[in-house]
Image (tube, rainbow, N blue to C red; front, side):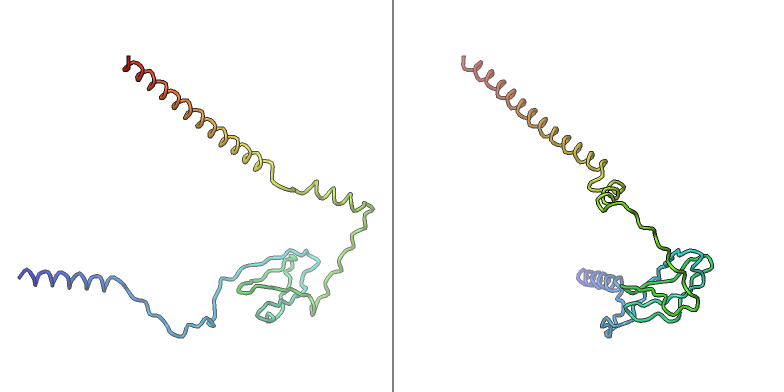
Length: 172
């Protein structure tokens, strides 16, 4: 009787384990060439009101995007992208002629002055706050290590001193 109860208990336990793990179906033809669906991303390029109604073509690594992409009346080019690694926008066959780029007047500043002014305005190297935090942390860590060494040395000397006094008192 006891043997039948153990067998029945083990059978019920095995069935619970089998039914608790659900097996999902696996399809055998998954070779990696299936269509991969990705979430589209929004791209907005603000070109200006003079670019309104100008049409662009987009070429991706998958090929040429069907149709043209017009610029809104606000001068903003809006499109959805996703699933490619490279995107090339061109304004080749637009029905509206794009505006001519304005020429920037040349400056008489030498190249050394331009380099000096660009380095003054840009942050070069490590930001000051990060550098101060790093140096302060290093000083704090070194101070803690020195303090730990001195305290350990002091305790060792104190223990040796107390031991020597007791040892001499016992020998007299």
